[in-house]
Image (cartoon, rainbow, N blue to C red; front, side, top):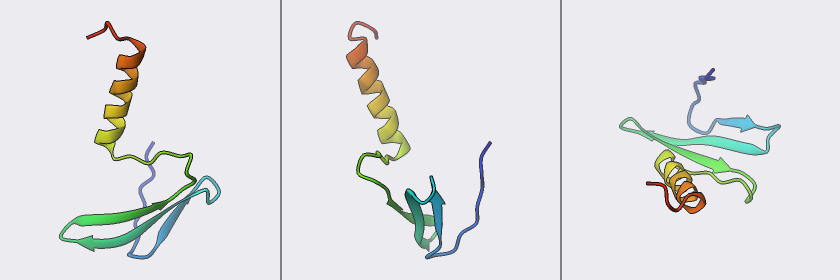
Length: 66
């Protein structure tokens, strides 16, 4: 299930009792700039970076696979 929220520039969303904050910074020609504030031990990645990390981990665990 996905939660869908509408936010205006400057408004935030809090995750994990405020542990992570997501703020809408600007909207320009359909491109949304979002700021994240989270503890340094939590990775925040674009999807393509996240998927690349997963693939790299899998290749390290199974070097003969592929």
